[in-house]
Image (cartoon, one colour):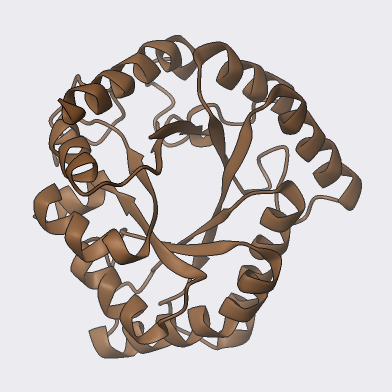
Length: 266
């Protein structure tokens, strides 16, 4: 399995420093938060995108994903959502990223309506994703935090360029064990976001292994299932500024993940 981290852990850090941190700590790639607060986002110019792609390529670090904020199950007309999806897909293509992350965002809407809207919007963007070599991943999050929730959307879409992102925190908060989540997500799985927290009530980020999330069980089911994809550490420093500095945790975190993977294979 390859390792990445999200720039949510280093909010606003210049890309040169992001790349250096990844290379120095032994990460294979980076998940870029696609927000105007960050160095590169859907509003970035062609020159900025090209410079970012060169920066990563020169260091041998992949741009794993563009982590966007489109909410595909949200209320309202399709057009703004589709425009946001298109912007994210084109940004990922320009950066050489293989994935785009999107949220459900269904809120308290009736399940069937939210599912249908999400499936229709993802199906509409699928041809562009295929043409550009990008995969759009629906994250286990908010209104669709369990694997079974995401599967209800992806089944009707039925397109190889539309998949799932497994956020281990949210499936756990939804009451799913990794042994239940992985089989449901496996046919669609793009990559896995790992993190650690103290409890369901206190989700401030902790160093990996210092909290209660079933990371070992997650690595175990992935390994047993023959999955050899990416683990990306999403350390939510942006939302918890009092949390420890990610740069000091990045190296030990990579070693922790390598240890989990090695243990899962024995």
